[in-house]
Image (tube, rainbow, N blue to C red; front, side, top):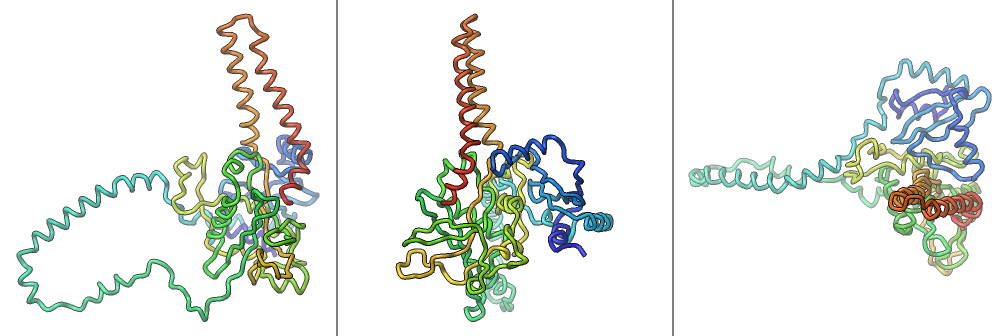
Length: 410
């Protein structure tokens, strides 16, 4: 029997996005990525390149699958790999829970066109109603003496609810809370308590998680930092004073007394960190909401997709049953468990910081020689300066790897 994780992937992924990869399929480029991640001790986001394929042990293969724009990999034992091959031979192209069959949000270009032509359509509809009312004015007297029929359809249409009916307070379960710690402008963490009610699902949660993260991070750091929000780590927080909470260590609420105050599944010893793999978490963070403004860029630059409205991921995250009294002076509770942003080095940002100064210096070098032929010394000064600064910056990036990750969690 296949493990639950493999069955889950097969049941939610289109057939053409699944592939088994052996160790012989891993090339030199992947080895270079692995050496760079090992040397810098950073997690790297290799987009737009293919992600790094983890190394395999003897008797293992990789099951490659795709979630959004990201290719993900999970280790498969040899006996499980044979079973996966047999299942894929008879499987449908799109399973019942296929995530790619989720209704996609409307394109931003369609929304713009709709907003432009809405006034025109409204004017035409208004003229149509005026002509209809003028044509029926002659029969108003007759209609006044005509018995009115039962207006059942009108009443039913006016009472249609736009959203789901809220359950009564007696049946509404008490909401739980996911503790989310974000490094803001202060040395201590900013604590966000995301309420998880019965209507909450993965699709809503990850959108809310990104909103809470943006609330405490400056736009400059979100857009220009080479360290981008990639996933969330499962951690323990320690409250040392009023509204002062710091990162303590990675972990889950395993103690029997403490574990009863949290809801999540699977729990230890079956559940081990990470309960959600970083690559899977990153793919969920890439999901879009209705009317994504980036969809106008097209599928090559932005692949719009929505998560299934289920609770697969939020079930794995520890949820506190009671509110965490962060600002209380008398609360003896000083240890809580939750999630914290994890960062990855963006290859795109590194290339921007590396190529923009070099290309600018090279452009100046060509311009100077075109107007001052033979003056190689002055033309090469910006190029030499740019190369020197690039070397220093890359050296600092490598040497500060451990200290940076340590400071992010303090």
